[in-house]
Length: 162
Image (cartoon, rainbow, N blue to C red):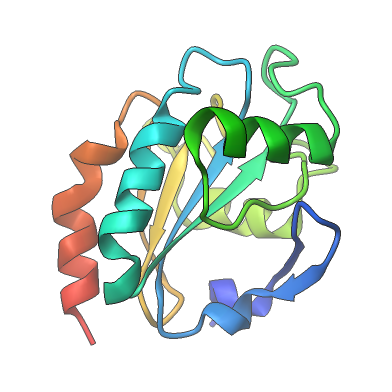
């Protein structure tokens, strides 16, 4: 069985990270953008990170420029934007594609494992979110309109599960 731990990613600073290093954590994986109507969700994501990190939640941000070219900057510019404007302290990864033939393998797996509305595997827009259990399995997919605060009950439930 494939889990999130079978994938790796590159941090926004260029360092490679095996997602297995997050084994035992509840993960919230989000494709982000700096110039989107949903960009203020960074604030809510950071609040979730601050509130639940000690209990085992890790938020992972994956910038993507695939939707309306809303994240055109370099990884360095994106990282600076997130820190300066939203105080983001959760891990941000390098900019990736989340759809199409060039989609990152992690996103190919996420979207296949938890299709969206009407069974669509495509990521519809920025700030689509995936909640993963401590064992690396995928629990739930959230639409861009779902706010970070609206996910708290599901996160608490996942954190309570050993």
